[in-house]
Image (cartoon, rainbow, N blue to C red; front, side, top):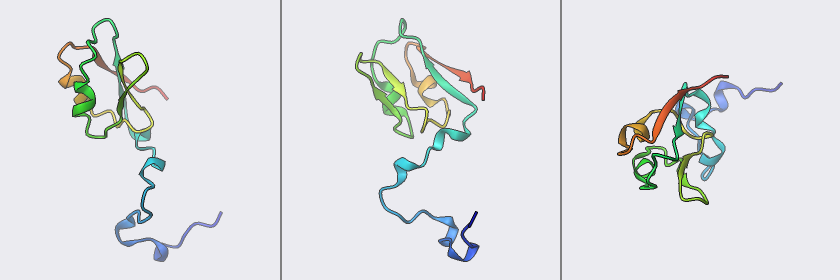
Amino acid sequence: MNYPSWRTLELGAAITTPGNAAELKTGDWRTEFPVLDEEKCVKCGLCAIYCPEFCIHEDDTGYFRADLYYCKGCGICVHECPKDALTMQLEEK
């Protein structure tokens, strides 16, 4: 394999190609992920509002679900849910 030389990297290994954030699957290193209990959920969307990664989106049924390709497992959505409809589950790989 041809790996780039350290001399070809940008300062700080910064990503300089605009518009490529969607290509970076930042959820790869999480240890826990949010699980939704639909019976408790009132579809308020607070989990999506407070998510620092903006990875929680409304599905076709009106429930808000995390995109696990980008969810880092911080648990803020679980903490902010007023109905305790979200819990964190241990990632098993």
